[in-house]
Length: 97
Image (cartoon, rainbow, N blue to C red; front, top):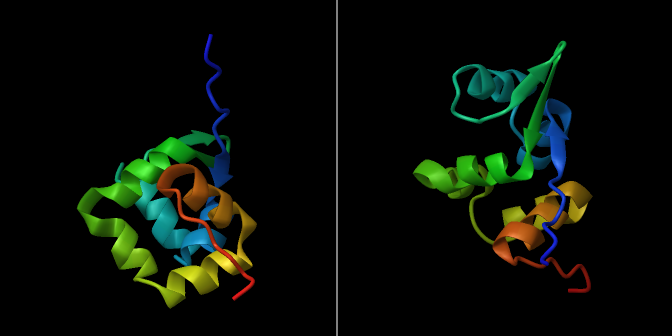
């Protein structure tokens, strides 16, 4: 029997820190259905697989993170992003450089 990894659940604040997008932009993406999430009370919750679907669509990953140094710098500052990138993109950040 294979165990499924538990999903990470992000809030708008988490995504704001990870993606460097404004909270309003993230809420707009959620309201428009471009990013799949669930609203409970006044808060939005986004599971990691839905974030990956969003980033994989329409080249959003490269639009948000660019390439190379920018992605490395952002992920070194944000543990959630570092874990997410490793889990879904097998992208490991070495801060020893």
